[in-house]
Length: 356
Ligand SMILES: NC(=O)c1ccc[n+]([C@@H]2O[C@H](COP(=O)([O-])OP(=O)(O)OC[C@H]3O[C@@H](n4cnc5c(N)ncnc54)[C@H](O)[C@@H]3O)[C@@H](O)[C@H]2O)c1
Image 1 (cartoon, helix red, strand yellow):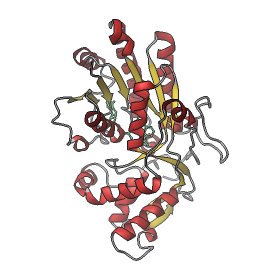
Image 2: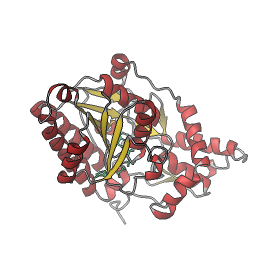
Image 3: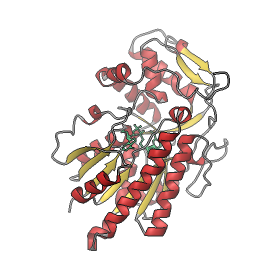
Image 4: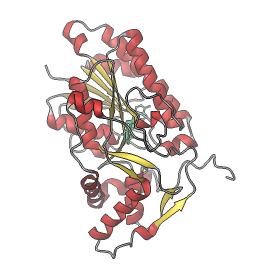
């Protein structure tokens, strides 16, 4: 019998990539439960929106009544929970929506899923599972010699990562207490096409393209491990198919880089693509006051998912970054309206800095 996936947050960056992947590569059907916040882009799903196996329901995950109805009508075989407020800087300016969606919303998803599963019988009940998508940020900053593995302690630093950590704990508690079959994945920084232009890579690209200054926080020496969104979707599919119930898996790209080096690499690609003299775009880089509570380094050990499920990233960071820059060059019609209507690339996350 074909799978029926209920995907929360499917109009976001990772969710839309996952939905495109599911509909193209399997016979599963998908209901996308999304509130359509500022970071949602229905245009990311243009290639699948006419599919008879796809439906979008504009719903806030905190809306228990509406969510119950979706579960009853769609009868999912699995839930992939991605809906969240996701931008660290926005969590500094206004933490409450992060608590509301990431913590309260996750609680509602868990409660509704538990009630739904309890009413299932036989193989329907046995196959049901909930995959919760979390982040390497829950482990907090790592020093240069450490890599968080699945047993590492939580140490979140930002309102965003604290809210994700709280949601992870809720998911685990629902597994332990109510027997809900849950799997938790914690991935590193995703990049790729269709990412809302507030995050480092797309923001750098669009600032460089418009000739505006490219603000790099502090000294730009913060280190992140970059994972192409398609590789992440492969990992999520592997976890849905063969992940151990009740377990957690780290998913890292194995491509660590300092933020300023990422920005410089983007500038070099743009110089070449736009036939500009070397250094043209890099001259736009400007070091600005650091983000408060900025973690220096994230690093996860993803040996477990590699060993147990045979997953590994297919993109190198070099090829993935180049393909991503080319995608933004060729798809202005996707991101230009976002800049006009939703976010103009201004600095966020400064409202609590002293002197403001
Ligand atoms: N992007 C990354 O690098 C990254 C890394 C690690 C983990 N994650 C996690 O992956 C998930 C998806 O991240 P993303 O980058 O695609 O985020 P995104 O901001 O692009 O998308 C989030 C989606 O969730 C929806 N949403 C927000 N609040 C909602 C609510 N109350 N009810 C229903 N829908 C709501 C939004 O409308 C949006 O479509 C998040 O849980 C995030 O914490 C992301």
